[in-house]
Image (tube, rainbow over all chains, first blue to last red; front, side):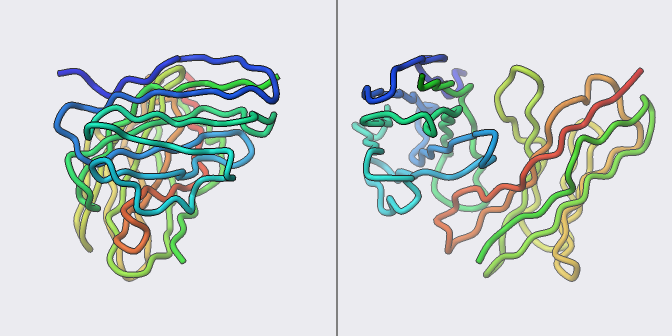
Length: 115
Length: 113
């Protein structure tokens, strides 16, 4: 079956512009996670959804970052007024349910470059 | 707090050598432990996992045993191949962190023919 897909695969944007990153989880997966992978910070958790709800937004790096999920499926991560330090690979993962025994399946990521 | 520490790389080995990548963790409660692998140009893939103490995860010739007494989850393989060259990440998941994956820094493995 289809895995987690993300779009775009690459995004180059100018500092100060807004960007929107999209994640399509595996069908039927209720839990969805966003992570960021950067050279300086390694892999860091941003936010998770259980259904359409994001109970904990404390992992988002600043108030320029927001995320939503609609219909229990597609999620978008929006970064407003991008800064150079936002440059990273943004990874989305989904799992069948929320719980530590459930495997998280990762998408290929969106490489964001802020110039 | 919850954290994962893994050995720094890169680790360079010859083909057919024995591999160990060390991983230790700190966690509140009872975590599940994972090894993920990222091959060059590819996304993260789960390599193996263990959900309780003394469990052994295994896949593709790799093994790791969940050791609660030493809070470790070391990755081993008896005979590595060039195709094993990748970055390996140790991670944990636990209830009080909302089951997010908490990651080690990653270890780059280079296998020379």
